[in-house]
Image 1 (cartoon, helix red, strand yellow):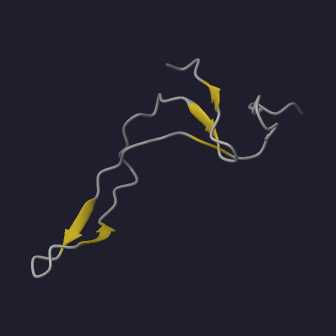
Image 2 (cartoon, helix red, strand yellow):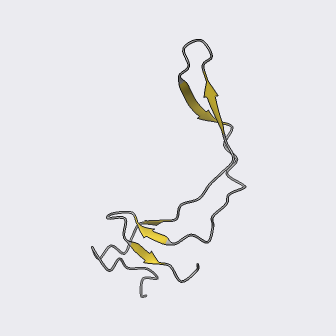
Length: 67
């Protein structure tokens, strides 16, 4: 079986990613102004599902045909 994706730069055929945005909350501490932990992440809703696919090893764009 042929791999669906292959990185043209490093040859990776296993791990890839696509940038997405998901709704979440970022806790803020009013006493010292620091940003805290990300929580209440909604993994059922995300944007940018049609972004290019990147190689997880070197970051090269592997497939941008979906744009």
